[in-house]
Image 1 (cartoon, rainbow, N blue to C red):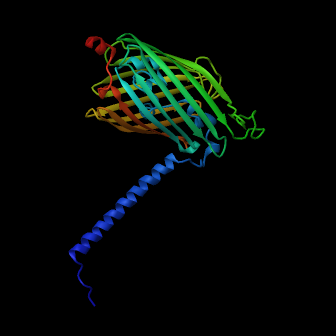
Image 2: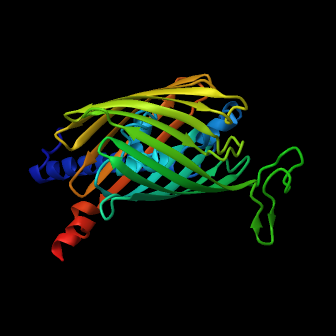
Image 3: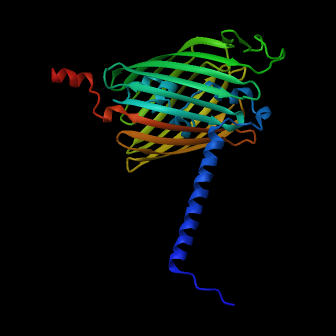
Length: 348
């Protein structure tokens, strides 16, 4: 028996249902991926991941710096300068607000924060960041609060100097050799957790621009020498060049504490801005302490008043880690809501 022919309307409904099903499957897949990254993870390889890597060797990153392997001490302007080189706050006239998400699945580490920088309303540029992190909930159960502020001044168009302060408080409830205790770092008392690290320190940086497009920098971080792997003292610098939307840079630093003995990190990265809107970024990093090579990349969209950026870095090692950084920025100087001090003087 032959079946009755399908009506055109029925075929249209069937096609619509198939497309709707495909869309739902696509959205479900994207949601599942986002949930797997954002929700607390059960790290399957924590025992294989060295402790300094679980805390990202004391670093907080923007999507731009992570995509370039961390090589942004010479040309890391804007919010990136608060983390890598305070001198570069004075590199460009900007007033940026940025929200950050940093994820490291292998260590079940998540960090969330915000950065504000202003070099428009005063010649003395400034920046503030607040980042909270949570790591290894099934093990050390470590949390930290990292607060920074930075100031920079352009001695001239070719020479910038900057300094920053940093406060960090870290606690953990995981067991040490004595189990959960104050000595092992973190048993909660009536007023909250005992911090195993609570201190303040400072950074100093400078950037030299001998010719247009060329930048050299030198930076010292955590210079009070806390002698702690979560807050390592580092000395380093970078050499970068930019022209017509293309930027390339190489950085190197000495880390005195993360691995118990001085070790080196070498980083290099490149960025190209397509149509002044779409940055494409690639980077490489070698970490002597972890004996690891890592590659990174990132994409973004930069509009007149806002930007959305994301990056991924992956160590070429079965241990990992994988680091994902997402940033959402708002450019207040483009909104017309603020005016620089020079504009105010001219209007009086």
